[in-house]
Length: 267
Image (cartoon, rainbow, N blue to C red):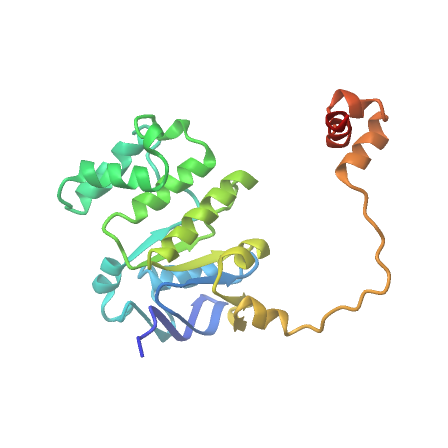
């Protein structure tokens, strides 16, 4: 059997008297999206920093892409990329210049071509010549993830990648993450948004007070609770009904409601 892309066994971490991680265990299959779900302060970022070799664990062990994070940190760094909670782009440089700079730092051949390929892959070609500071939140985050993928790392860590983004930008990032997994990249995603984990993850682990309290697929987690029996359902008003109740029925004609338009079309 293929070894997991990430294996975490008994990881602990304390900051003085504060015990943040209390023995974390899980595995992530290659080419899958694994969501680490937890509230603020649950230890998600601390764990990601340990797995990306930025922080030493207090106890336990972890391997990423077959390399031990404690004894072979350089091998781990060659196999991963980390995208933090806030986009790490240079807003003075253009999108293409940001990508070219990272490609040069990674000593890749033809960095300009690498940049152009990634701009096309992330639908940023038309914006490639603009300063990153003019990008929307979703575009800036997509550029940030594109920069993380230079060098084709097999494992990528996304630490709360949609924090502070509007709904449209969140959807753009979700599509990008799904594309990564479809191309064979292993994604470990930390989030505090339930819908994000539900939308993206192949498996979900719930981190609470420093330990994993549940780990499974969405279907497996849903089976933990009995199905609710609904005997009476009260119909909730639609947004259109609320709008008309507030501003009056005459507004329906001025806003071109779908019902009115359809009736006219049928005459």
